[in-house]
Image (cartoon, rainbow, N blue to C red; front, side, top):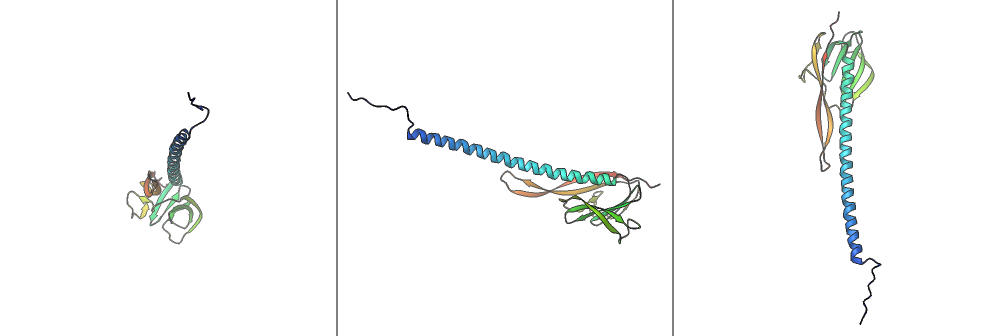
Length: 180
């Protein structure tokens, strides 16, 4: 009788290939999952950053206008007089809102000087809108209530990785003090 020799100590080529295929599938699934989670994390982080920047700008505007007694609105700019008599201006320039100290005899004066600019936001889509009237210009007297709306630009990411610029409005309502 012939004796069949079986060697159970080694791994056959078929078993080795099967293990490699299974390991490749597991690593592929894990890497795709990691990339998807990382992509989602980056999108949500960017969205949070954009929203925080817009809220910060609106809070700074609200703080600046807290003790305002008059507001003068013109294209791409508005100026206001604070309770202590200081004049300020907020200008929309190349997608940015910038707060300035304004030096002039009156808010309506066109040849005043702008100094000490502070950038409030850099992702602004258009000039601020007053009382839902995009072309509004003129004086808002003390004691008036008005709405200030600013459209901020943010990037929306789709599942397939494409991007699309979107606009999101942020609104504050301000009650001006009456001058005594």
